[in-house]
Length: 187
Image 1 (cartoon, one colour):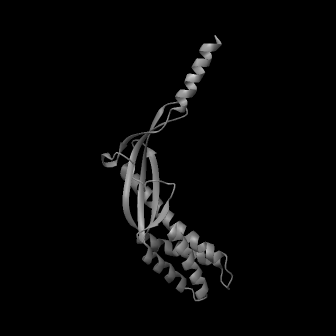
Image 2 (cartoon, helix red, strand yellow; image 1 turned 180 degrees about the vertical axis):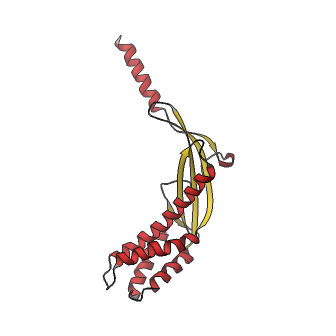
Image 3 (cartoon, rainbow, N blue to C red; image 1 turned 90 degrees about the vertical axis):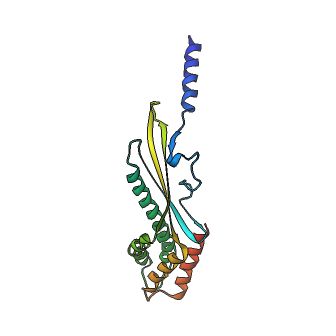
């Protein structure tokens, strides 16, 4: 009696461990997911552009266009957030008669809208995926990825213009921000 129970338990264990996601359909009938469609590296620099990837997910019957708009916005937000955070690292660590945190917020909020308008949608990719839930039932999901970019020289110019609006910022601080941007763009 113990042997059949053990066999059933082992069968259940192995069948659960073999349950994985399965791609059912891809945009334009593609055979594989593009290399850029990943969240493991949400921002990167290449060929004079700074890129960001956004993702959205919905039920299998979700509107592809709505998921596209959401993932586009997530990518734009990721790009402006990373730029604002990198500049904030410099500004919040500097004391020169101005509140670095306030200046960082100024660049992050006031200029994010302007930067966002200059972001170019590059590519979209979606896939329908069958995902087993905890009960072993399959759930159909749609994942949408968006790739957006902004020209690095334009981004640098916009940030420098923001810094130049505040006359209390020294030339040395502006150089530190440039150095931080160099590090960001090199990743």
